[in-house]
Image 1 (cartoon, rainbow, N blue to C red):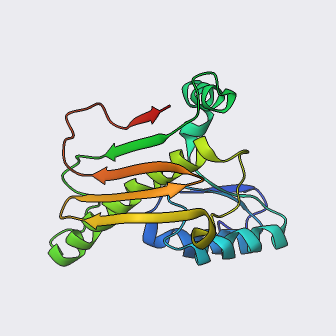
Image 2: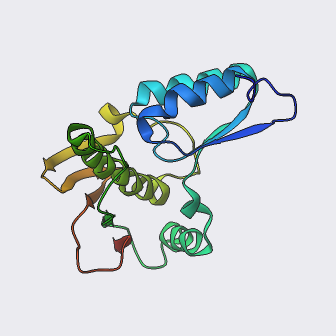
Length: 194
């Protein structure tokens, strides 16, 4: 509280494990601090909406740290797709992996470590969803996706080390995978089919 109440602090970076993002971001916003939160922003869309609304009311910015969106390669890729020079986009394949042996260190608490392992796979999945939105959305809209209107989920599979989803988003087939297994490819990789 002392740190957040300081007039010398304008912004806060939250790089904690995802389960703590909402609590700490909300507190910082309530103290009038701008907040950069590691991805994913929160566990649920409701929590993300609450943070966005609170930030607006408090006159501060809350931002999810999807830094790749600002990399020249990603910007160029989006420009090429949006220009139509290669034709209509028909499919996106996104595969993001992380092979670190431990998601977070919880000492000898094996149950907590197993929960963290599953959370880490789902945390990686946010990259897959974000690249899909980054490429297909007309603007850099910060609006949340209305899953009921915008997404047609075809298949979701959760395996021990992998989370897979196939869906239609804005008329494009998207195959998204987050994994702790070696896909035999450089990671992350994105394959855009036109």
